[in-house]
Length: 184
Image (tube, rainbow, N blue to C red; front, side, top):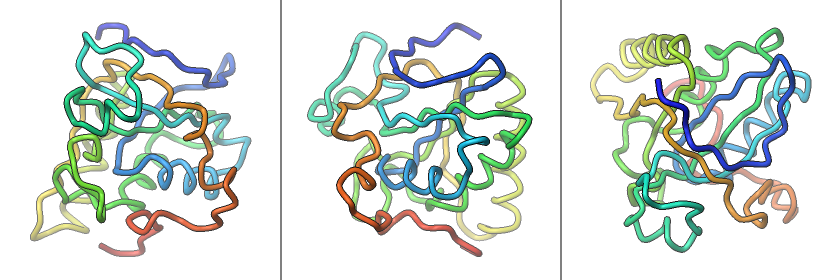
């Protein structure tokens, strides 16, 4: 696996690992992860742009919204594997968005809103595929999951005003497309 290009201010530790998820608007994914997991489990989360064109560096929100950069709105998560497993994070990810809608979540439409899991290790790839298979079999029997599972190629932090957007702006709500589902 090649080393991804990652430009981020993500806080990590000597024992933390990194996971990347895209599931529509990054504000909702970030907010629910922070709300659900304790600070001892998740060290930090940054919203940003993942797996876009390799010749585009440090894309802006405006550029990503055009669809021309092929970046996905994503979250990069620094987590403590002794306190929360990658499997738990991946299962939670599948429960907080609709993995069956191609290039959209709710009213957000475009390739930047695609569903994706961008792994950083072969073990993460295996876990992501197994979790996806379970959700396909048990939750989405008649509809195909379109979540892409790919190596993390690149990630750039979004502009500062996007970080913790729902919390910083006292919007004590979730994005309409992002909520914890008990069933599909």
